[in-house]
Length: 169
Length: 134
Image (tube, rainbow over all chains, first blue to last red; front, side, top):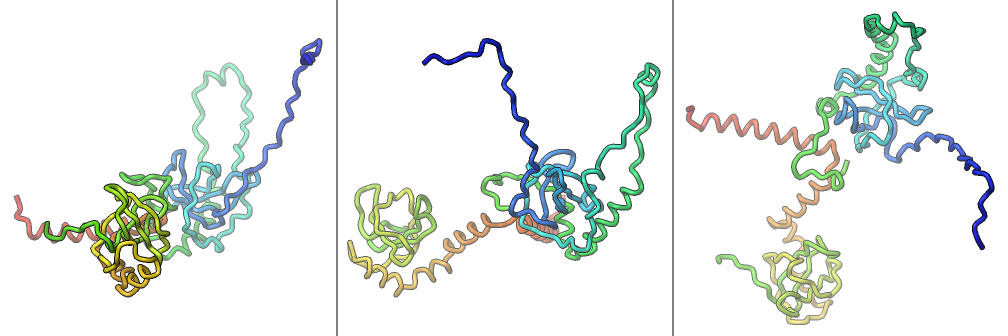
């Protein structure tokens, strides 16, 4: 039988798949130390707090240890280690995807606005600084072992003879 | 050639490659220039041929006969406490530490690095005292 072709070209309707948030990998649980693989903070060891509604992971350095703030990270760009830190003393339940939303600027695109000198960067909001401090205090307070502190401060580094597929994390 | 180890009947060998890697077994017969018949009833190695390229000779030799029965090989192995002697030997310890290193987690590797740095710092300090200044 010859294949049947419609007389007019019919656009194939593509069913839009709902974007499912990624499943949390088995080993990752609150307090787990993760290694970030990409971005400004690549190589840094951070602490996983929770998975946000959109699927991204909420992590924090803590900021005082390695300069990583409360941050959203895709799971694929992390390597979970087997080390865990106690985060029960820290309250991050209020942080969700809306917390990270950019403040919308009501700038109309006029000619003069286009040629005007660029506006200064908005300073980091005090409310967010306070949230960072409170979340980190609950975590850093429980880390008493100086080696663990040093561990979080140090970046992960591959050296000669270290092959990621043979390493145990 | 002070301490040459020979391929001989009864030589305890360590399989370092292949499906039996990591296990000790005994040379029970030599098949040809490249293969031996090995047996490790107490260490889980079925009597089989094994190329010499896959094994390392250890310092231990058992007084067994050629093509000795597996049961008697096991008896001799246990009598001479080969596993105990292997674990205490230099080569056995090296193998064990290599396995340990491969199973270190990220945090353990970090602690090891910190400890090695401390150690080398102490060594350098002492070396400075001994070495004459330029």
